[in-house]
Length: 105
Image 1 (cartoon, rainbow, N blue to C red):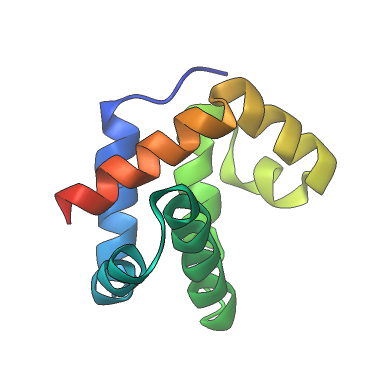
Image 2 (spheres, helix red, strand yellow; image 1 turned 90 degrees about the vertical axis):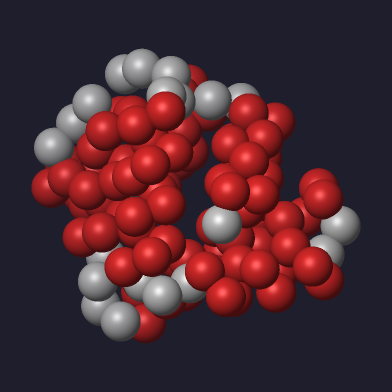
């Protein structure tokens, strides 16, 4: 497992573009307080991925920082996933990561 890096930022931007979420994220960032933006971006992304049955995009993205195959992430329990995501970055670091991405879009 490793910390978030610049490649993760680019990979997430590509994911947002592939899912056509850029305009939704702009709306979120305009209408929300800064602290809430990160959560809303994650939530919207997950809902689009789940809604389009394109979950592999999230698994593939997470396979980078978690350094695990996407299939292993797919089978991971939610508590374990949350634990590992917190090892990759703190809640504040995830928020900062997502807020930075929002500013770049």
